[in-house]
Length: 610
Image (tube, rainbow, N blue to C red; front, side):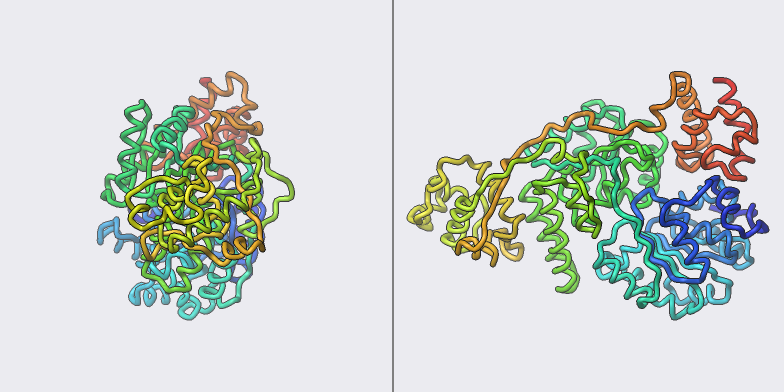
């Protein structure tokens, strides 16, 4: 990627409103954006926590135009840097990246352009930025702002995977007069406090706009022949773009193959692929309609495809933050989108093992276990899931959302105190060291070699639960784990252990309610609000299709994702307004000076022909 030849806004006025319209084609700022941008322009540090799709990037891109000088953007992924640089250049803004995907000659040419003041925004990874050589070189330039994208990595990745994220704390010492803005969509209060302490030493303006994404329907169901479940889920959404997250590389390949055999356009994506292959797969997903991406968490951060209609998980994510970030990739265009999480007790055991095996401090492990506890509670929620998820992030939703599986199909709970006491008695009687299969076998009075060998058929509780089936007992045990009555011994062999809460229940000091397990068949269509697309008439939809086709051809010719040319919202606005000349085209959402110059005539021809 060569350095930009010119900056359309190098000599423009510094008025905020003019820069917003001329550079990006927007008439007004969204909630939170103005507060964050004005704080940066006042020279303050900012931590901006906004939901996916809320326009976080504008919080540093607009100040970069208004303030002048060089804005250095720290980004965790090469694909994210590449796409954002391409989008900025199409808006006439001089942006560039220095990264390991480019040749040394390309990086050197870019640095010369940066040194000469020809670059407005420079994107780098934390590993590239936090070298003594780079910091020393930047210290000789006019740095107006540092922007740290995906700032939650400072707290959640730094200790184990990306130590250079934690090193970003040194920026305030090396560049004491330069403001820093950190941006993320996923940070609970503990993480926000951690970021503020490490990066800003408490000197920061916190902008938190809320976490609710009401257009996303939320669903969770138990695994029961998960391959059939995921196949049925995708079949009901045939032709829609979506993401399916899997825990392992092999599983992504297996699921993608399974879906292709069913006639779907499914691609696998994981960290084991080389960069060329990953780039080609990502470009297909971004430009071709109806692709289902089956991926590990290596895919998604910074992916700005607005029309993803569903996100499904075949395995339990690591935390509510990870889950929220991953489902947040759906429905960024504001139209209805669906989420579904398939999970079981073995998912909980595996996640506990991952936490314990990570090379992190005991305090970090404790926090990760607590985060996982919160996600398990969300999965077992007997009440509105959205209320529970938002409560985790410190936000209160006054009324049930009406757009999650629990609201749409309410769950009845049953007093299970007696059943829980039976389980706890069996767990204690067998030594707090056996897994769910053995404990359930004891409760149901089964005859196994292990039960005979250990004499567990002599326990008073042996056979006491024979009236219930195996799956029913497994569901009760799983919900007891979620309720904190039992814990899984991940340092051993996955055995069940009684907790202090379980001991209190055995003493009659607390109760337990459970819900009957349901294997949901998710309806193909959920309740949804009308969208801008739905207001188009027949000819409007035909025009929208022609506009999308033209956009795709332009994107392929330029080697960029389609949304970089124009967002779906811009095309819908074109189809609705049908501009007849350049002045009218300038009023379309997302049309700034550069896109008016470069694309008006091309899209006006399509509109006139349809």
